[in-house]
Image (cartoon, rainbow, N blue to C red; front, side):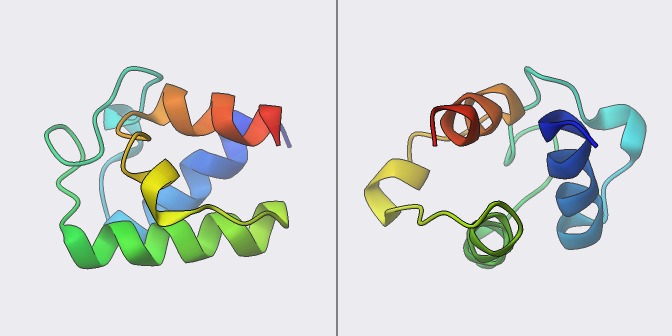
Length: 75
């Protein structure tokens, strides 16, 4: 599965949002309804699935689906 597909699955599991709402420019809070606890859980899930460490200060900048994917691909 591609990175976008993996991230989409994580978002669906952690946020309970609709698959149709998840696009590259979707904002985690404004468009997908994430709260601060969701953001922490999302960060942990991304770290586990993609075997990387996301620093708290880095995750603050990852507000859209596209930004998360770019961060993962830079790895």
